[in-house]
Length: 243
Image (tube, rainbow, N blue to C red; front, side):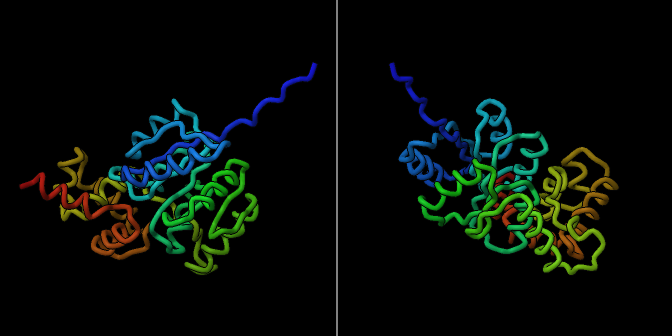
């Protein structure tokens, strides 16, 4: 009597994106693959972090531009929780700095949102095996470490003291404060809104300016919007609520 062979284990995928059409398109594309299974989806960073513990996905397709916490911070939080899930960042931003932020935050791959479905499927399979993907280049961990080091030096120079520290994503509180800054709020207003002291706000702002390598609040706000950490739609909602 022949021993029946077991079917290969499917790769469980979770999708994190707040655009229904894009999210549904991903789900449909993945459903066509026998070795992939969408186990759930989330529309915000906080929802994603809660679902990960319940769904235990192998791979997470994560949008950078989420309505609450930016995707880079979500990726960093996922890794800080010692999750084995591989994170694929999906974004419309192609700047080298943004790629570096993502990979240092713990992502396994960085892909443009206009990636072909077949190519994305292959990326999912690759990261599930423990590989890292940047600009169609497949890397082992040691190769990724070399890429990060070379990219940091190319962007900030080899003689900067601990240059990698410039590319650590903002903490949740710093992101929260930066969103308030883009809304035009003063330190006093931010302190009242968050229930913290003005000195604490100032301390966070100093850290934000250092991490983003900018000189003032305006530059920090512009950088945040340009990189997709803060959305203009968030600003519009804030204005509407205040009317």
